[in-house]
Image 1 (tube, helix red, strand yellow):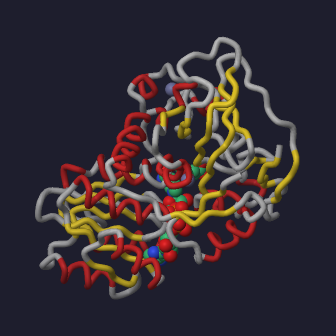
Image 2 (cartoon, rainbow, N blue to C red):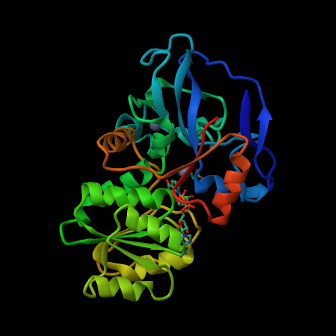
Length: 344
Ligand code: NAD
Ligand code: 9ON
Ligand code: ZN
Ligand code: ZN
């Protein structure tokens, strides 16, 4: 089969011919219908050798959807022909977190060598993908796989961050979304769908800000030195009850810290490597800071249901597998709007 692989530290991804994998006992093979590009892929392909922990060669793609194509011995719970989305943050299935469906916080995954597809295990940017267990599949039903595949990460990750912040997002509150890219443009829609907060979006790029307005942001602000004053002005000096940072760079964390209200919450989703000093002299009284990772199995089901009733929609740009390397170059350059999706 053909696959898009990251093969050497510092190289660009390549389309290669590899053996088609066979499902082992309890496993499921999917024929891939769609695989999304995430900025985290760019991040890991930019890591130096001493920090790169994802194995080589790595078939990319941690947002995957497919048709169930073959079942391993004894696999039950899905049928050949089912259209499904892949829940990516695989856990052990047995610890307390996994029992709650929070496999994104599995306490055994690291020790057992369990890694998500595309972030250690072979990923979805290929004609076929092996999924370790049918519990990591959610039925798509009539949802279009290309339009919904990114809900497995660009949807569920902001959904998880927003659900954890719901107590702050009361009527009259303000939510700030920093970075209106793949995750951010879905975050704006989730905020509009499940809260009555006023949504302010920040980005450096006017095209991303235009998309933010199109998907429901009440106000947009160019990210930079004047952003904090603009957020304070928009909130009568109070600040934002919740700030969702989908960049995580030092400059955006500084904005988040200065723009959050007393007793508010900052959710650091972006992995831009910045540091946010937290404490009595650093953050407003009562303000909380969280750095969430991906989302739970039930949250993925909920996000797919939001899409099914038309409340959220991923703005997708399609690419073939051969166009994958060029698509990653666009993501790296910041010229991708919404989400790039490879259709093998
Ligand atoms: P993306 O490239 O699609 O979007 C990033 C957006 O941020 C772009 O619109 C870009 O113009 C904007 N931006 C860049 N610098 C900015 C700045 N200084 N101020 C305001 N906006 C700025 O990326 P994505 O795929 O949406 O991922 C967003 C981040 O979230 C990445 O860091 C990614 O690695 C991370 N991520 C984290 C998790 C998690 O579980 N914590 C999951 C998925 C992705
Ligand atoms: O889903 C993503 O994009 C994040 C959680 C991956 C980050 C990583 O390096 O594992
Ligand atoms: Zn991701
Ligand atoms: Zn577990």
